[in-house]
Image 1: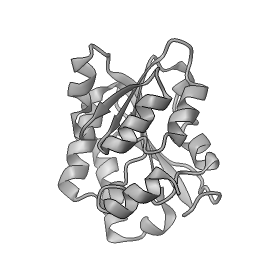
Image 2: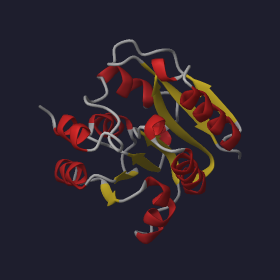
Image 3: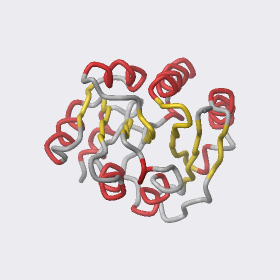
Image 4: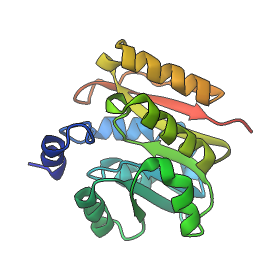
Length: 191
């Protein structure tokens, strides 16, 4: 069993999935967001690192890469596996301060594997505002949601929150080769 499964069982209100994202979802969340040209990339909630691996494959040589993980065990695993990723432990809402503490620039791209659907509205808002403060003008925020959740009140509220926060929000096709099926939100800041 993966570390993610055990962390999900121990902290179901903080860890939103019991199995890692599929390769198909990892490819989708890292596509069409300008990752290949980004000089600074941030990942929120890397979990087991499956999206981290895809980011590392697609990023340009010399691009800086930071990840924020709240769970100590998962953060330690990411740090041990990826020496070229700066790993911060703490809440994703503090991304701007974390980047600044290491003299890292604002991110061109922020990719999130966080389980927004299980977060209270106030935490969602804090994280999204932290993302906006951490992005360069025209920067992109990408996150995913499970298909079954998008018709629930929490999913509808989250979509509205994204549309209120970012001037441009688009969605990908459904990634059926994921458990459960999911789609990607791609959100762009103003220039």
